Length: 95
Image (cartoon, rainbow, N blue to C red; front, side):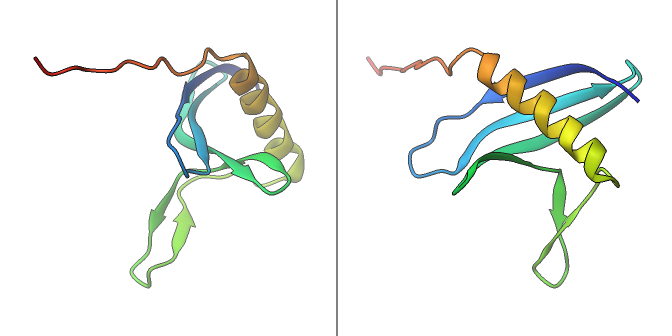
């Protein structure tokens, strides 16, 4: 399995730990969307897509099984995040 593409959308919200959203393409054939890039106490990390359960917790929808694959995802996504353009500060004005 090879990560063939990573797309990053940076997010800048005041008082938010979430710094971006990633989409990953595997072997040019399978896409995983909504991987969150989070600022933690030890730096950036990724959180796989999840959904809220009936008990109020969260459960990953998809995730790497081995630490080796998780590390590969994290490295590729965080490298792409560091190289992504910053969020543009588009302001709308009412006339």
